[in-house]
Image (cartoon, rainbow, N blue to C red; front, top):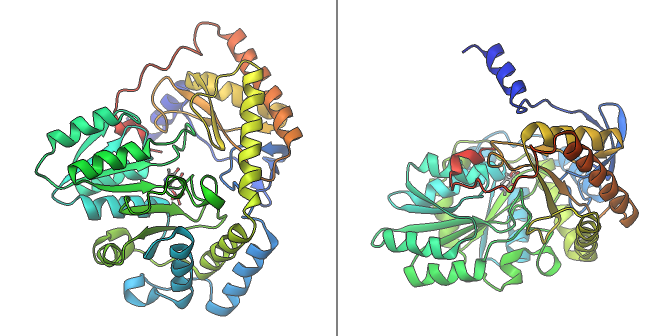
Length: 406
Ligand SMILES: Cc1ncc(COP(=O)(O)O)c(C=O)c1O
């Protein structure tokens, strides 16, 4: 099949993607393809990507250290600014050590592969695509356990008995906004001697004490071997990190191919993240505001009769079902000034296309209330247009992690 045909096929199935253009920074309101809209799908949760202190820090770093790092950290790219951010992140997260990566995608693929060698990986069915790809890169035997199902996980650990096992899970699930049963996961990990790697991409800055994440909220710092987080979401910059023991940090530097074979983070991105981390530590009320806004949005949506699933965080899914219907709802909301991107397969399983809403601390309660009304009306319209197609219960989770490539 040629490329044109494949593109047509994607269009026929409602799965065609195009890049929408935002003018200006990622604020709560943006100009999208020339039209002003409320931005309700950005991961700039704390409004730090466009904070003056963060911008200034990035600009100053460009003048002091230059724009690029010039090489892999293992060649000549490891700069003092990288070390400063690693130390600050380790302190903030209560970890012995920290290692920066180029992005969350690179961190997950590199870390899972570095730890899974010769062993078994046990991965939640709704883990992010970068974890799925890490399992592939490792060429490790991978068992995908049902979403948040600790009994299934325990069964898989029994089956893996005798071999080194690594459990890997998102803490806050990126497309559903629910959280992993981390205490129980750590309990079975302890019982079976398995390692635990968690991805706090959407937990950092958003959940836990002062935004320290789910691991900190549950006091599991000593139970989790590696805590991955990104700099590109609540911290408003770009890049990622892994907090872990000193020995683990040395192992990652020696074995994570995505760190070894990729240029180090640019100094402005590092300095921006450092300034954002300082703001987060100094102003934890940003996190309270984010959580209050998310609770208000969930309540408004429920008051309109919409189901927000198991979301208990700033990520709120409105599952619609069909891809075409989700796109239609997205376009209808856009016409009324609300941008909530439709998320379709393969990012989410077949039959569970949705609007994925992401609250920012900088959204006002009024904006969120108005957005809930617009979204409810858009979804009602879609339901009226195609009463039989959308809104069927998404009983299609089949544990097929391959379906979750972003
Ligand atoms: C759970 C999760 N992990 C990792 C990533 C990748 O992070 P990055 O965007 O820094 O590559 C994402 C990004 O969407 C994510 O949602």
